[in-house]
Image (cartoon, rainbow, N blue to C red; front, side, top):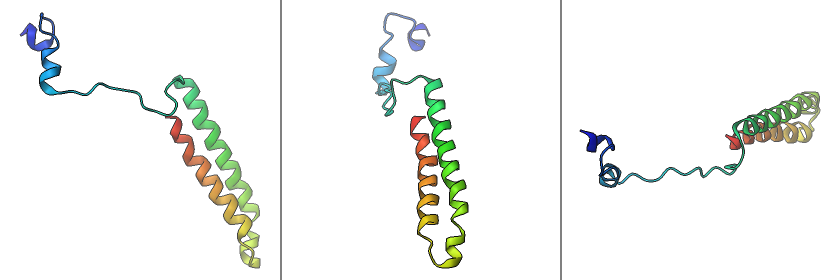
Length: 88
């Protein structure tokens, strides 16, 4: 039983027999701490909300036939908000 749990002299036999892959942190921000990652997520989310908020001021352009500013601000706000999750 000790050999099965890896406590005996043959500890690597279980992992070799199951062909387990080593766990790697392949995140784009592998060197960042959890605190830094959460700050990055919060900042990106806040910037995205600000851009979305400013797009609401440009919504009148939709009714006047000029939706460009609304579309740009709204799209960038969503992209920035969602890109913050790359830090996790």
